[in-house]
View 1: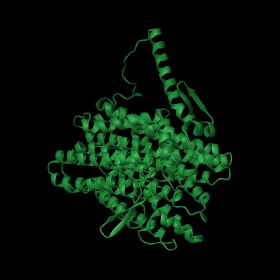
View 2: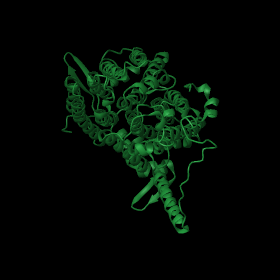
View 3: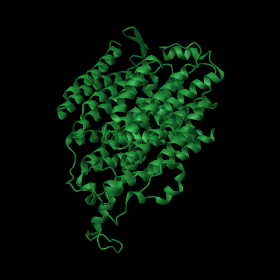
Length: 620
């Protein structure tokens, strides 16, 4: 191709660096700084989105390139896989930068120079992680930029009790993760600083036995720390994600932890020697960690009544689904059954699809909670309630995000979760443990639904805010609403039209050379392969070829719901029913007040008591 993707990448990174230099000088004029940060970040992100589009759909830039930074040469790689992660990072950067313009007025007592210094550097570091093609020099620079910038963003409210301590813990554990990853490469025979992943893979061929186990074990733990994998995520993620400013929480949970997923997939699907690699063993290990992570993280989330901690624990749980999909794909790929090997395509597509979906709905949930915090001054579910009338737009988009994360049909989370779970269940004919993991994932979705009934009900329905917030509550300004509306629309599209995204993920693996799963995508098309050869259950829609069940079901469910609502309306109208308004029955209490209403910490008390052993317990 004539387009120099690496030149565009360097220009975008330079623009992000320029934003970090220029915008802090404008920070005394808070709105001007916010707009300037948004303009520069959006300009850089637009360039990066162009790279993402070309690399995913047109297969550009598939060759590793050495770029000189003075005397040091660093390997970079832009292929379909890295292009996907470039895309989600860049998109969420734009959404968070726009949201930040008004939201940072929530901190009148804090200077904003550090925020606008670190925001673009944080984006720059994450882009670096998914484009550098080594695990030493370039990786270290990108990791440190990402980690140190995010550290200062997490501790932004440094005057709040415990925030600095939690931020310090985050920094220490992320540096530990970096040490583990870099140390893992030291067990490779003949490895040198600055080696590309291709060179590292070639040298793995002469590394065997316990050394090879140490390499993959350390890399899995190191990237697992970043991805929030159990038990490592519990050590830092809820404390860090809940104390950062909400647009940063959206970036931390929405995209930063995905760099850990990127590392795991790049390691176990690309950095693979021809001999001595026990993919089946590592697939079982990764899938097992995924199943435990999704269950424990979700149960711990159910116990929270701080809204941002609830979302943070759910980030652990949702990452469990992704890790389960990755591990399951690796298991299936190394199966002796050709049918199960075919299912590895479905599992890895499900993992990437849930990566995308989680980016969107978790970003939306944190931004919605940020709006509630901005308007009310609290994120304690025990003090909220009744915001549906006061903040109707935020209520609607938060409801869409809640249904999406819960995996309700017609919303985004259903499509990706169903893809992962169905592949595990179908593979169970040969590997029973995958069926068990699928059942755990299915049951955990019900817990997620319960958790978000609590979040939405205690925040927007019910009652309570009138007794706990003295000032007038209004809907947030347009610059905070627009990003949420865009994300909410995407949640709907990704749920209703998943076949569009399946095609994207097929292109990603077709346009990413060197992975052990790429041959499975040879000749793959959405209609012929995923529907007829694998899923077996399809629905024919006029004008469209056979669609896989996980594509058709959301549309069918939506049609059933709409038909039912229309029928109920017609039935009500035909019977001449009249509505009557009467005071709420208060079970004998004379008046409804803050003392006799149902509070968040009382919900699911018996269930939480039974699962106290899972940790994450919260006092009233």
